Length: 233
View (cartoon, rainbow, N blue to C red):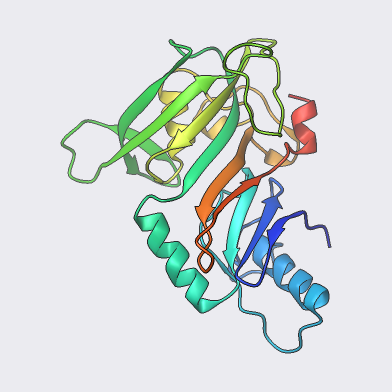
């Protein structure tokens, strides 16, 4: 069993999800992070019986990075309430084809969920949901060099590394919004990328998560290093 634990106490478990692994069980025998994590807790804590563990948020199967689990029912309730109140700060890194029109900015679109894709819709469409994110270009050695320990990648071969902060959490939001400005995520063939990565992965990574601890109320910052397949990117 391969599991990269980023943070753990009696209330929370944060794990660095590899691309290609489901976050939660799907009703099939497919590998998933939740089952892996339950096995890890049973072994690490020498815990008999069932293990309570529930994902506070999910990542697409093709995306890598931080997934946060609640280890108690009380922690789950409090973390869910904080997420609904927008008290989480989620930072993603993405390698995209091309360059955004500005070095930093905000993207606002109305998206609809259509046949396993998110599509940009006209404002006023009753089925569409508003999506908002901020992005900035990360350049080696420049003023926008990231402070996170995951480290920078250089822009090369027509590719650009972006840091993204989500303000809404819609289906395929980052993937659809970046594609809408002509900068599809590398490897994301569903949204227009012409690059194929091994294992069907895409170059989108949940790199940093800031949450309020459900018991101590301390601010917890969790960071996840890039996956190994980013070396090829």
